Length: 193
Length: 157
Image (cartoon, rainbow over all chains, first blue to last red; front, side):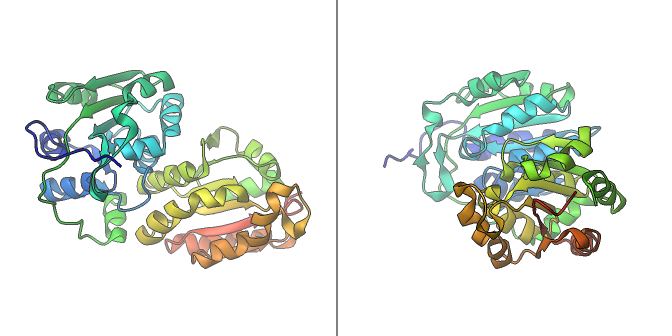
């Protein structure tokens, strides 16, 4: 087993999430399980955020279902490489259903960070190519350290569906606390917005 | 009750988001739903999609063959059940009574205890109780619970 090491300088996922959260305005945000939910919850919790605690792989399905149901509002998904690899078929559904209000962001740290950093196959597999091949009309990949904020702003303000892959480093050693809102409350508050 | 009437009954109860993966037993229902039915690529994806629709204000139902239940266990237990996200599972009962193709026999023997074990209210639907069981399912759904209704080859017709 090889592990993707922490500790070198560059954009980690938590920094990337910190840069995007203030740009969301009224958009819904669906966060994948693991550090994505933890980071988003601790950096800027809001009623329109949904934190997925289990059901790995399904953040993209939840986001798509919500986008189809609320076509006039933007829906942003914060996904991870491990999560997307588990539910690749969702890209084909997004391409087929074409919700204009959907922005699918994948933070690709090339590992399963919250379980110890075991490597994921996104080291070799280009998930942006998979999205493009699935038929997603707008796809971009940002290399480690490359600016992604302008692309994200653009996708928020234009019709999608769009897919933004951001290569990031692992989160710092200091873990953010777990989401401490009861799950039923997370669901209730988003349904009531 | 035939498939068309079944669809009408679902709509009368307020169900307004339909997705799933087909089974021949459910073919007429899916046909009756027409464009209201969204094809999903896998059963767990369908349950996740339905959960998102519920968060957006819809009342969802997922159609699948019982062979797809295994895929759904994680999403049902770690999403629907803990978040109180209801979903009406309309699951075709292949392998009922031990008479079916070999790939359906093991799941056919255990599917009812499978969903029951995971605390999902479950009924096998006989043709004379379709209306009553949909009403029962609806009462659970309205309280935020998933509900699993097994549809046999002779339930609708």
